Structures are given as structure tokens and as C-alpha cells.
Length: 260
Image 1: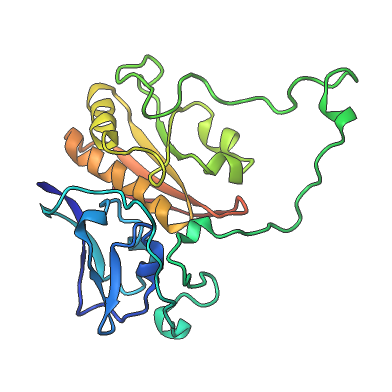
Image 2: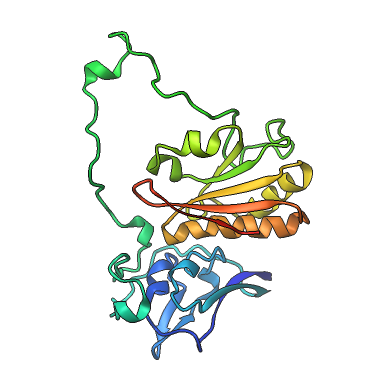
């Protein structure tokens, strides 16, 4: 079948091994000092590994390939020694010897506000049921559930929001949702087979002027950007403004960049 799958340029690959760690499905292996797509059937084509490659050796292409098969178990991956200066990752992204996704690494944030006491959580002491007003203007919000011609799309800007972003950042509502429509998706854990077609239909059938992709900094979240790019191409729209916002794990906005 013809589908989207990664391509690794062996000339550019320096064998750092970061893509091996980023591929949760275990499709990539190191052979003779180079990364290779060893198991095409386990490559989901979302490109979670793209953001990890410091050499830009990994791209997405559409070609004949075996249908994607979710691995029944995540294979163990031998620890990969990495020259951190050569690969450009510094100390920011450790290499995982177990083959897990960097986005699954356990981290503890600093300067976290303590949880309120039970007496402060309820309304019996006169506190309101909510302190900060929600800027969500509609329901549903899951990309799987929203109707293609939902009235809340209209000519509003559309936020394509990663599932984790509103948990990581307390600013998501006022900064991104206010006055906009929103759909929520996770490129790693959702069943994304229909996402490109669904989003393309939404863009084709509604006068949405702009898309704001709000994703997390972990590599697997890069799949959300690829879904939007593919949907934009499939929709035939050439007038859309598309921007990508990257949110760090502590809620900091790392970057905002145009995609179109």
C-alpha cells in the first residue's frame, strides 16, 4: 500500500542514535554506525523522530510500504553511546537505553505551588466553584468527536491543541483558546488513522482563516504538526495562515514559528 513513512539519508546520518530512542515502536536500528529503518511495518509515519535528528537526515515521504502494525511489545534497545557535542543535544535530552519515548521520561518540576487544603477546595466556605473563567467557547473538543460542519468553526481561527499542553501551561486558555475554536488530539496515543482526512474536511468546508498548532516540546508531539501539514495539502487551501507554538514541560512558550 502507498502511505507516509520516514526516509533516512545515510549520507547525513552521523549515527548519534537519538532517533532510535525517539521511535517508541522500535522501527529504527543502528547498523554499522548508521540509523536504518529496519521494520517498515512498525513506522507509523507520524515522524516523532524528525525533531530528534540534529543532522536533518530524516524526512517523510509517500511510497509503497507495508501497512502499519502496532508492535505487541516495545522491543528493548541496546544503549547507544552518544557524543553529545557532536550530536548537538547537549545535556538537555538524555539517551534512553530501554528504547522508550523521551516524552515518557519521568521529570519533577521545580517551584510547584502546593496543593490547597481541603477546607480551601470546596464551596462551603464561600469560595466560588471556579476562580479563573474558562475561555472554552464550545463542546465537543476532541478531533474524533467534532462535526466537520460544526457551527463553532465558522470564520474563527482554529487551535489544534495537543492533549498535554493545557496541563503543562496554565496560560493556554487566555493565550490560545480565547475567541478561537479548538480541537484536541494526541499524535502518540490516539488512533490517528482518520485525523488527516477529518481535519482536511474541516478546513475545506469552513472559512477558517488561520490554524494555530499548539504542541509540546517532546519529540512525539511533532506528529501533530505533520498531521496539520498533510491535512492542509489535502484540503486544497492555499490561503491559510498556519503557525506552530511549542510549549515546554514547565509551561514556557519556547517558540512560535510560521509553517506556511
